[in-house]
Amino acid sequence: MRQQPADKLMQNFRLIEESVQISPLLTEIDSVEGAWDLNQGRQSTIKVQREAKAIPIRGLRKSKIAGRKKWDVHESRFTTISQNFPVVRGEASRVCWRLLSVRRSYNEQRKKQVFA
Image (cartoon, rainbow, N blue to C red; front, side, top):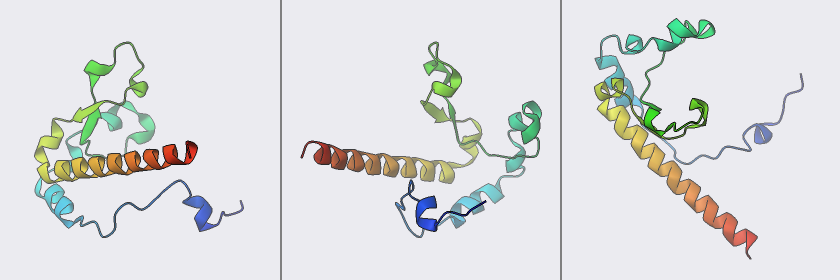
């Protein structure tokens, strides 16, 4: 298989922030005993993921399904498990707002290009 150049591999990604400090997140996760075993839904229901462990911080907002398939629902909420991880929740919220800001900026630039 032929390998693509690095610039092609990352063409759909853009660095939005450098030097993100993850040590507070790791410290918080380490402080919660059995953190990686709090949710075992994937391991018990999806055979190929029986060894996959995760700490779900956000999840599907079931009240927003309204007849749609669950995969088509983008509205989310903090999970009950995430209450154990306030630092992670805060960082997740900060990153989401940052991404929305980047997206708005990108959309405004695109509008200017289209209507120029």
